[in-house]
Image (cartoon, rainbow, N blue to C red; front, top):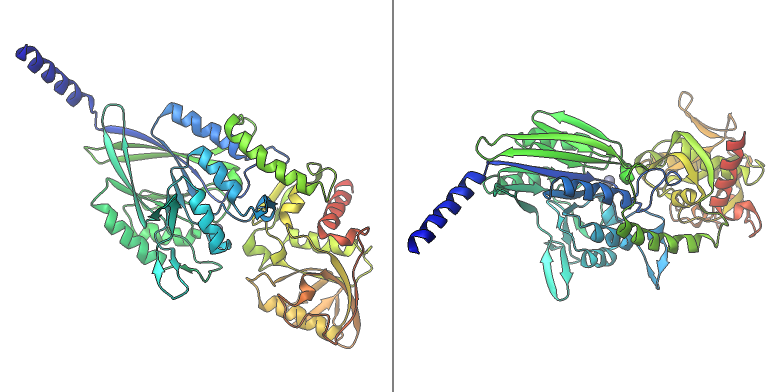
Length: 505
Ligand SMILES: [Zn+2]
């Protein structure tokens, strides 16, 4: 009997030794900058339920498939601005969907910190996925800097600066993959200490390199910053990044920086093959369109539909047919944060034009704050009424204001000076003549003593963005506020009306 057991053990030992082929295959599925849980462009592209189908297909191909989010997902979104069960939604819908999809690792983007700390902590506590923050830490009111944490029941778990993923395949080959997650400090918030993402990434890498087989970045930085990190840490083979919203795969030395399109219009699939003996790693990256060729995953679709029902319900208070296509954008309309707050974009001009049209163009010009556009995305293809609400979630009325040329010029100068901020102005029939250094209304230099009739938002006239632009200013001569039955009553209706008109011309 002893002999038999011995023999059996020997066979087992032999078999298991022989089985580890020192080669392991791993799939990474990457998305970044996903604000919408439902599909876009009239339902044609994107959608978390489609992404989940791809996720499941990859899991079938290889159980060692891991799902990553490279930052920017809790804000902005139209659903997030709405109230559900007495509480502002603010990203809760996204956490709900991401929980159901079992995300494996999630990095912060700048937009996570758009939330107030109190709300962000709620989202942490609701999440069942692993967060990673290499540089972003919680700055307390007393100035102390501590890690953010997730609280489940009464257990607090700090969000780490580094993460190690242990992967093992069927024949027992195992690999340890280290992760670091730098986050950009754009639009910084008081409750966040952004550290130094270069130094903190370097530290994280040093910490990981001896404990792991290789180290990968899950970042949310500008392209150039990712490239700096790739140069600084030349052994990092892959940085899964975000922030730019347009897909790319950029080689820097031995590294590839991969970013998918925003809102899961595409996702990156990275197929890794690692040889634990030769230490050779091969990565094949494929950009996969998330479109109607992918079915909706039932479970995730159910959750998405529950949340979009909340949205449809609220929108029906404003508009009868929320899913009606009101415009087809052959050229993408640019509502990304950086351009809309620093240059005149086609979308900004369209909004301003719609505000003029709301008064039958009986205004001299229009100015509106770029910060009223909250979509941080480019819109293309079919644009529905819901999309217009996504562009301008806060709505508000378009006012007709008589003001002196003196004040108008001061306002325009202020807008130009604050490029990069929400008070940067999108204009219509007003422009700055660079050569002559003068502001022009309808092509003519502003006359400071003349009275101009302009259309602008009720928000701007509160003086929150431009401190001196208030009804009390003596250079404000007359304010006309529209009544409920007028198009100008809600800027979104004004935009929908203009889009439909332009579509039919
Ligand atoms: Zn971002």
